[in-house]
Length: 244
Image 1 (cartoon, rainbow, N blue to C red):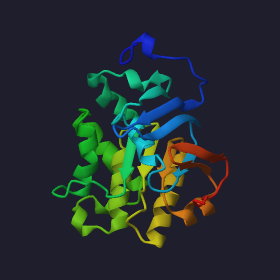
Image 2 (cartoon, rainbow, N blue to C red; image 1 turned 180 degrees about the vertical axis):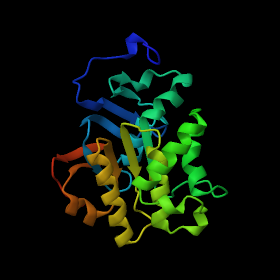
Image 3 (tube, rainbow, N blue to C red; image 1 turned 120 degrees about the horizontal axis):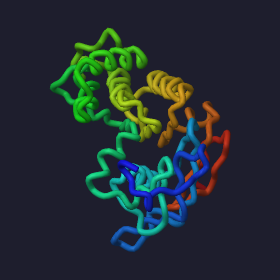
């Protein structure tokens, strides 16, 4: 079986890439951050997760990243029970996930090429392949001519494109974007969302956590709305539901 033991594997419908079953996360205060979440995301979907601060969005993402463990419930990614991973398995598991954050998290002392190449170096991809892969992914995100630039020489939108390139370089089946347009102006925000849509159309499952109502309402993707640790709405082509 390689990474996972047989006892950690469960036969799931082939199209189900993420399955959460009755997932609860309770912090030391006793208040549940998540309360009985049932959620299935299919391969190739583009999904928005929305809700006010404290709704549970961040906790859900941290569970998928294995930064937190649930208090109870089951979480399967590609059929694997990630709640039962051993510590040495976690870095390997995370190669299934590309992650993009609001604050870019680029290495400020390295240029665009090295920021993207870094994601391949840490998993020991041969140098000859890195030299091929990095220009390809930079071309995909529209930064082929910026490979020598340092982050401080780039606009916010360009920095986010570098972050997306870094997230994609190892070809993960899932891309998690946590408030990817939070620090960007409206025009650049739309450019980033169109880029994520293009990536999704190439087969990557894209999950976006956002507060941007205009983008959510306009794009008409699947929208999961959370409130106080529960899913209150899950619409195939939905919009942003305001807190009552």
